[in-house]
Each structure stands twice: as C-alpha cells, then as structure tokens.
Amino acid sequence: MTLDLTPDQLLSTTRAVRKRLDLDRPVPRSLIEECVDLATQAPTGRNRQRWHFIVVTDPDRRRLVGDIFRRALATGGGQPPTERDLPRMFAHPGSMERISDGLRHLHDNIHRVPAFVVPAIEGRTEGASVLDQSMTWGSILPAVWSFMLAARARGLGTVWTSAQGPLERELADALQVPYDEVMLAAFIPLAFTLGTEFKPARRIPREQVLHWERW
Picture 1 (cartoon, rainbow, N blue to C red):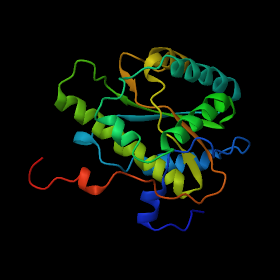
Picture 2: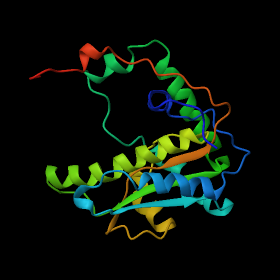
Picture 3: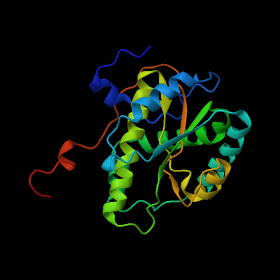
Picture 4: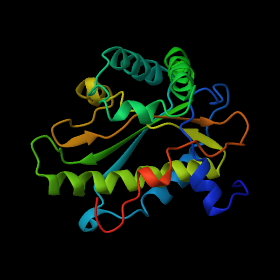
C-alpha cells in the first residue's frame, strides 16, 4: 500500500524527518526490500552498479551503531558555513531553530529508531579526480534519493545525515564493511512517520539559483 501522492507531491514533500519518526513501530523487512529494489533502478555511472545498502534492525547492533552516531555528532565535523551560506540558512525565520531542535531529538532517541540504512559504494574518493568523484557520488546519490522517495510513498520517514563521516572507519568496523574498498556515503534513520501529511519546504527564490546561458 502506497500513499496517494502525485509525482510532484512526492518530490516536494519528501522531507528530512527527525522528530516525526515513530520510534515504537517496527518497519517490515519487505518494505525496506521494496525500497532497495526501487533504489537500484536509479542511473549509475558506466552501469557499474557498485552500490550497497546495509540495514541495521537488531536491537544490540542498533545500540552500538547509535552510540557511534552520537559520538560522531559530538565531533562537530564538516566545514563551517561561509558568509555566502549564512543568508540562505537564515532566510526563513525559525527554520534553523527547528532543524537544531529536530537534531537534538534525534540525538537523544537514536537508539529507539527501528532501522538504520547505511548506503555505501565500492571505491573511495580520497585524492580522486573530480571526474572520478562525480562518477562515484553520481551513482550512489540518485539511488539513495530513490530509496528515500520510495520510503515516503510507503509512509516511512528518512533523513540523510553525514554523521558517519568523522567516525566512518569505526562504523565500517562495526558493520564489518571493508573500509579500504567501500565508502559509507550516509547514515539514514528509517521509521514510519507520525502522520503522513508533509508540506513543501520554504526555499530561497528561484531567481537566486536559476541561471540562463551563463552564471
């Protein structure tokens, strides 16, 4: 059973869900498998299909992985916002406060999320050329977005996080992933949503992002 959404509604209401994850309802394996089947229909560079999806539902392993998630968040990894980023981030009053509140909720309840999905791809991009990086990420990103759209259509919520980044090797070890050969691309909590109604996000005007013929 899927939600009655038009393609435009599906694309515009697949949100980053943090606070509205149902932490008490298990996600059937069959639904996750359906989402993965749809994800692997995404385009892939040179048809190499190097994607993988590690799904964690076992309570003990979720606690282990959840602890890594919390410690990774605490590192505050990633580049800080630039002067150009800040006006966009705060263009809509209250939006960053809501994101921060949702992240705190997710941090405090990560051990209760019924499933984690860790998309991965064969090959690493450290030191790779822009071409090789674009082909690698250009293969896994469309597949993960397809997974997230498929999840939304089935009443499931997701949020792309990069929390695995600072402790990627430790997470790879916990999941028995060969770190030197496979890159963990994201860390995605997965659960049914509390309610299925979601609205499009407020974004900066099209005029600020659309360029015709030249920059």
